[in-house]
Image 1 (tube, rainbow, N blue to C red):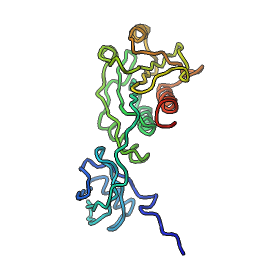
Image 2: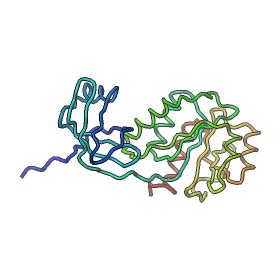
Image 3: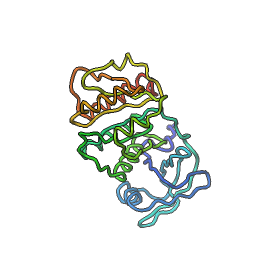
Image 4: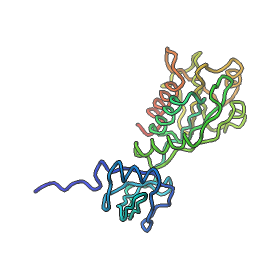
Length: 246
């Protein structure tokens, strides 16, 4: 007897939609997403799609109607509830375009709960294009299977970040001048990781950081890491020790 093919197939596209999903929803996909699905993926009426809305989880939909520039879906069932990700923030100094894209994409894939751009004295890129970062977040969530988008906070200057820092959240400061190895730091959620710009933190900033009661100095090994490498390495280490990788 031949095996029954899995439904939906593993190759089924995933798509984020701001349209509220539910059993009676009939979401309409338009614009660039519709063009991609219809003209690149060559989807047709009856083909499946997985949708998530950052509110109710992931749903299986089937294309009920397809035009030249839009398609309408019929929701069949919910496949997964909205996930709960570990309460870890990544506070990072924005870097140049391609490297910033890499930080956003990989941190999202690794399961970060909040992305917080931090403007430091040596930050070269002070203007953060929010729409670009939001698009990177959505694309990474679609690819990695997340059902909850990480929160994207507005950029904040380092002194203001420290001034308003919540007392119950450990702030792991990736210090180039040394610190405690990750395995020896007891910092479960709620926690945050702070990484600096390419030029590192200034002496004045280090003094301010070390004067904050929530800060714990973190060592990321004997080598000097680029800003984006430090950010992703730290997130991965934390997820292995305290997050949902265990």
